[in-house]
Image (cartoon, rainbow, N blue to C red; front, side, top):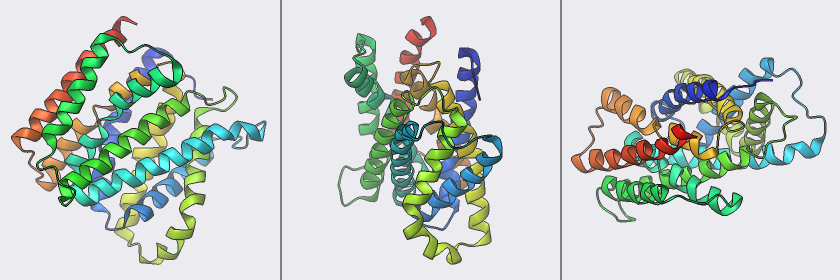
Length: 283
């Protein structure tokens, strides 16, 4: 069973943020649609985790209720995120996803009765203002707006996933929980994805393998383990650095040069992350 102390959890989350930042890159490189990408990503992660999970089945089957919910939320998060990448590109997709710390603060307060501090209200304002700035034109007819909204929805589902992971039974190891979540995703999408598998090229399988191993098996397991010793909002703040890495990768690989307003919006989001990390450091 993977057990982390607070320092190990923080380091693991930072490394996970870098690998998560590559997810949009591999998703853009793959020519397959979002359903095939998510199915292949989950399938490969499932196979990678299996040798590491000594006993995948739980002691009591009731313990799978939280991983089942987590699998649904993770599947929705991935589907909406890769839809955003296909529609609007890596930059806007990841900046939309960066809204999830704000969702986490609000949802954590509502569901766990944890009071939102004054500084955290400022975080919500900064994240919201940042999202407005990164939207070139707000129109449901514009790909940029639609893609950003898909990204924001992916942030909402990821925030819900982080909170759900807090309720994972202690008898289930993080790898067990991650394994079951990916299994549920594979089962949910098999009916749509399996008939399309013959059309997946060898190169696409390479990108899916990178997604499953580098961007899923490792960071997802660390995330589940970390929220057992950290608050969900602490994990959210660190993983909110993902857009920074994703923007740099997209700028370098695809020449997705961010506009001044996008940089300004990203700056506000980063400022929100910096402000929010101060109370966490005192904790």
